[in-house]
Amino acid sequence: MCKRNVIAAGLFAAMVLASVAAADATQRIRHVEFSIAGSAQAFVDKGGTSLLKNIPLRIGAFVTRDVEIEAEGIVTVGEGCYSTVVEYIASLKGSYNFPVGDRLLPFVLFGYGFTDSAPIGNVVAGNDFDDVNLSVLNAGLGWKFLFMHKAALRVEYRLQKFHGQETYDDWYYGRTYTHDIDFTLHSVFCGVSLFF
Image (tube, rainbow, N blue to C red; front, side):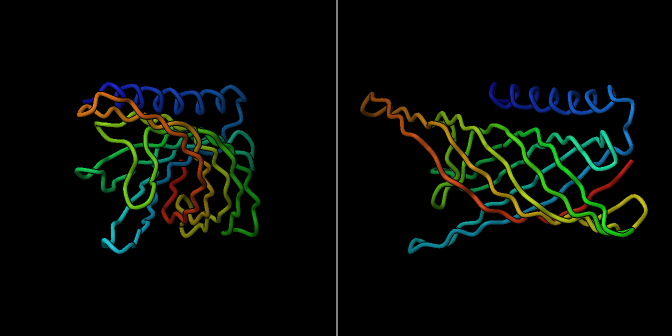
């Protein structure tokens, strides 16, 4: 396993533990939420179509009836320059839930994270030849629709602002190139939440 993946997994685990510990410290955990979702983005150009798949895994703790802290890891699978690549985005988010009736729970979220990849054009930037270090600002809104006592359908719109640098080592010419990355991505995620 690549060193950066081990570091990313360790940081994600630390964020999960920190979010649960912060919620536990208030002695008011109402629920713990586990959520899995997915989104797909298709890039179409003259050369053909490529597909980028995102799978976010979240664990959150309600520190009050309406306020939740979530640790999130998004696994991104897409086409790299030479092969299929699997990358990650790790974030810590806060959300505010607005209970409406017995079954509908609209929410807003805001968070910050980091990644070693970003969908640019029709490929995933970040592979064995690139060094990509980006921060990710997350903002969004969505709905949880309870269809069972401990389960909900979760749909959310997410704005992600990527910012950082990509460094590419051109081994053939012996040069290193660095350029800034700064763009916004709009996504819709659909999935399921389970409450414990």
